[in-house]
Image 1 (cartoon, rainbow, N blue to C red):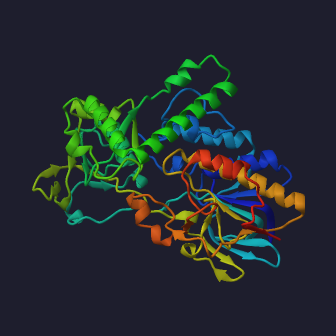
Image 2 (cartoon, rainbow, N blue to C red):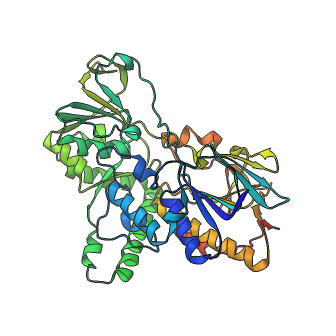
Image 3 (cartoon, helix red, strand yellow):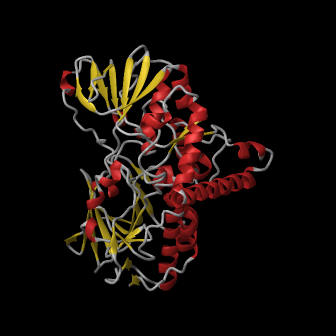
Length: 474
């Protein structure tokens, strides 16, 4: 059986970043990256819907160690995909990726201190260390509820996760169901080409405008990239962290600030209280950001509109709402969300016993109690995904160095029975709530508590000692 020192599962943003860091800091280790699809890039290759872009600023969404070029704050999907693949080529990681390698099972054997990784339709591979960079959602199917009367509709029904190639929506009446990041991206992107786009939401979401180009980055344009990038990056980290903390401590104040900004942006064209005043506090669910207010511009121009109501049934010609209103449509886009799926449908076993994720506890939100030589990457809900992905990659480098220097072969977090279990995330988004029962738990104190705070994690992940009394080495 083929053996590698480190096996990374997933060749998206996280997996490529992890492999680059290992190539840089552990060049003598053998590495393989297994990718279930035929191409790299993860999310940024999979999603092809109109307007696909980041909803985090690119100075924190880019890798810490590889500056994002230019001053674009919220970049289009193709630009991000090119960035990720360019970085992979620069570090020689593209040569390590094995495509069409879908991992189905990983089994740990304490006697050999190795994982045996089963790959669909291929020979198994053994590895000393496993790093799951599979993202957080099901790539094959999105969350797609079946609506009453859906089969009666004579037009097209499309889920953004499976957008048909070269689909022509010019001149069509479009209804986009949803109010999250995907919906608010689709609406302005389609509005100039479609006859009209209606965003149909069951309840409002907090939406804020941010500049399409970072003004601070533009001011520092004459500085060398090696100086400019970290300055802009840290400015954005501190501003975002401060805004999040203020939102949690003084939600009424932040609600008022957001409402005033929306009134300015919408200028009377949309009823802010009806359509953009959620019942929950800011950051109970993720805030949505739109570049240069493009969503609000579409509403002001009249090429798009928003309706807040619930669906009674699809009809032959559109959607009938609970209020009795009918929305005519030629195309209905169901931007109804993702299906949460950590670790990409991979069954984990330790010494012959199946690992039930809900029975484990997350250590520093990157390892699982009772699962040796295993690290996973899941990003922040309140900040850029890559901020956390970078920290996890750094931690793997530190952890492997610690093992090497002491002649050790394995490491596993051991849960303290006195630690009180809590749900994995204190987050109210639908895709999280639907999957929460099957996720690992967090604890009521460090290192088992999920802080969702980059500044705290910089200390606990990047600088705190590895041998902390919780990890067990052999």
